[in-house]
Image 1 (cartoon, helix red, strand yellow):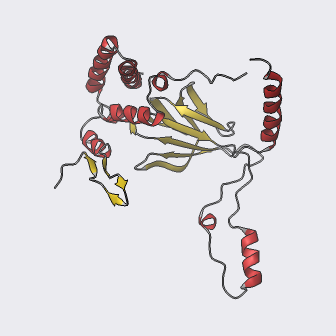
Image 2 (cartoon, helix red, strand yellow):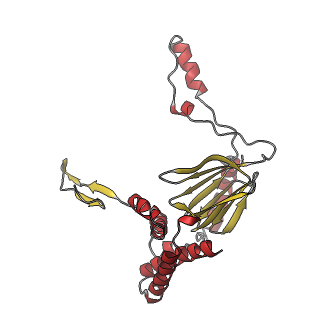
Image 3 (tube, rainbow over the protein chains, first blue to last red):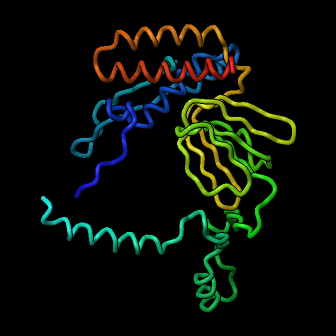
Length: 71
Length: 203
């Protein structure tokens, strides 16, 4: 009847998506680099985004996630 | 439960037969450089003005699958922030697929391989360049083009051995003390990546 899919990787069964797994692997690799490559690589990991929900056509207070300090 | 089995079994056979008549995207002939129907229709109505270019005409057409096996493999190795190798002609690459290290020669069957953390080596004549790839995918096309994409890849001499040993010890310890599934998975990922790094540096 309904076919079961192939064996899922351990991270998928624990609730991690492929994108998250790939990013974790990339971060672990970056942390094992020699200087100066390490500091260059760590800048690539920085995430900066601002998100605001809209209700009734007006934006609410935005949530800001940033790894760079505000100037 | 099995009453509907005959009905359900019949349906997949028909749909898979239909699906099989569709060619794989890797077996198609070279892609067109423009939409000929549009251009003809344009010329009929407005013969004096040149037809506008559509995005497809700006793209380089995919090279057709040659009838004889080419002598070199063309590799595109790209990262999100840089393109390491762009259409480089090489003899062979060895990619760390989840099913094991796979050697890709010109004329390799079209394959999509998910990569695990490991070493990718590019062989060109007598030189071998090795990169440690964190994870990604490799698309091998029927016309001996290979696209390898990774989130992070470094030449082996950028890796610091002592940090790798420390990381491996730390994650092995975390793995033994992990309680929830999520913690276990994260620790296991750490152990996998660090042991692959270790193997890459010592192997």
